[in-house]
Image: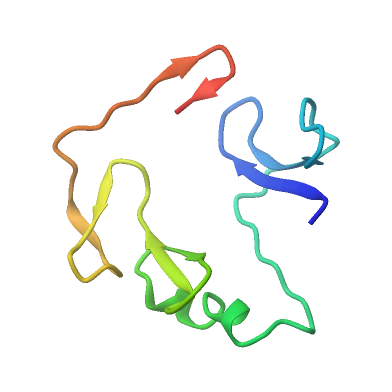
Amino acid sequence: MDNLIWTEISKDRGGLHVCKNKNCKSTSASIYGSKNIESFAPACSGEAKTCLVNCGNCSHNCLLVPGEPWRSCACPVGIKLSSDNVTCAPECMEKVLFVASKTGLF
């Protein structure tokens, strides 16, 4: 893949952004107001489609990973994944560390 694609939700820069993988120093394209990325390809194998059906049985976010079960469930920042590895816990995490820098929040 030649491009890095990501979404950002913020007051002044929220949207879909694209840059070249080899030199990602500046964004080459932006579509503001978008909040989600979905990828579809006719030649996708069954593994690549894992997250397309019922969000991979994840309660919030489904991420493709190499190897069985081909997906990993993830939760929004501040919410932890339950021991079943598919459901985000209703309670928030007790401790969360955010690091702010000139280039972003991590």
